[in-house]
Image (cartoon, rainbow over all chains, first blue to last red; front, top):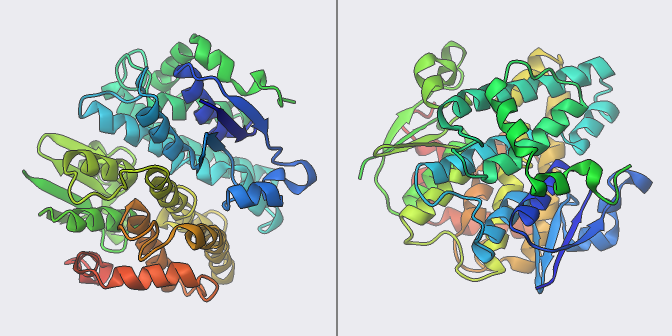
Amino acid sequence: MSLKLYGYWRSGATYRVRLALHLKGLKFDYQPVHLVKDGGEQHQQAYQQMTPTELVPTLVDGDMTLHQSPAILEYLEERYPQPALLPEQEPQRSLARALALDMACDLQPLNNLRVLQYLTNDLALNDEQKQAWIAHWTKRAFTALEQSLSRSAGRYCVGDQVTFADVCLLPQVYHAQRFKVALDDFPTLMQVHHNLQQLPAVIASRPENQPDAQ
Amino acid sequence: MSLKLYGYWRSGATYRVRLALHLKGLKFDYQPVHLVKDGGEQHQQAYQQMTPTELVPTLVDGDMTLHQSPAILEYLEERYPQPALLPEQEPQRSLARALALDMACDLQPLNNLRVLQYLTNDLALNDEQKQAWIAHWTKRAFTALEQSLSRSAGRYCVGDQVTFADVCLLPQVYHAQRFKVALDDFPTLMQVHHNLQQLPAVIASRPENQPDAQ
């Protein structure tokens, strides 16, 4: 086995894959891709040829090169099934995926670096307008998630098993806190977040604990 | 079996699930949710209680209620495996997922109704600025996809099997054409799109062929 992860310490999508790798106890070689320096290393030819979307992360596993973090999570679950990050039984199994994608499809892509760059460079928004944008989408997603978690959560998002949903929640709370979005209205979500923070795999995956953290 | 799909004729995420249902030959009861009328039926209490994100689609299968179209695709693939919409072998299997999510995570959520409403109502963008926003994200995603398809496509996105990637591509081409984004630079993508249009399941799934089409 030879796993290599290309990513960036503060990238939420990279954080998801780091979490899955650490939770499954998989060793990997980490290759930092600096998203800001020199206009962004993800746009340089070597990375672009490997990953045409010019987005991180990319996982290399032997002969395979994979992009898109939710697709990487599914791959890891099929290739390295234990410990499982998806419940075996329905409806928990589909719910874990759906809550993960509420974060991965309908929150993170709206608030990531390239969108904030467009708001700044192309639309000339000021800091207050950008802050309002980030808070708007975060609160919409977290309001829905809080309601879902009030039905499904145990120690974690879906009962007492760490799942894809938790793996996608952690980076969004990190992002919200970084951009100072108030999270007082989401007590269940924040309790789950607190419970997750106790896990060694989560501690090892945190952005500030990566070698390229600044 | 009793499948019920809540959605909207012009919603790209609903279109994905319609395609998967028709491709798998599954009968379903269609429940239109009008996304614009009366401020949007997806925000009304009955729908919101079922689906806290207030987004379409939602699939009901017997006792189960599922949201998030990529999670619904995975569910349908596991529950109703034939005909398969994911290749059995790697790396095609993960690639089909990744290309699907390039559309579902990094394109559609940026250009959907609620974001265009925010650009209009909160940021007061004019039509030209909104058109530039839509074209920017469409062209970025399609440029990367064209490069990927030049390596992977046969008759469809990944070889000659219809996969999740095709199911997520069709709604994005529909959206791009609706908003008059020029697609001349994407010949492989458009050839795949043309090939898909010949399939009876695709014809049955097209937005204009739905009972709530206007």
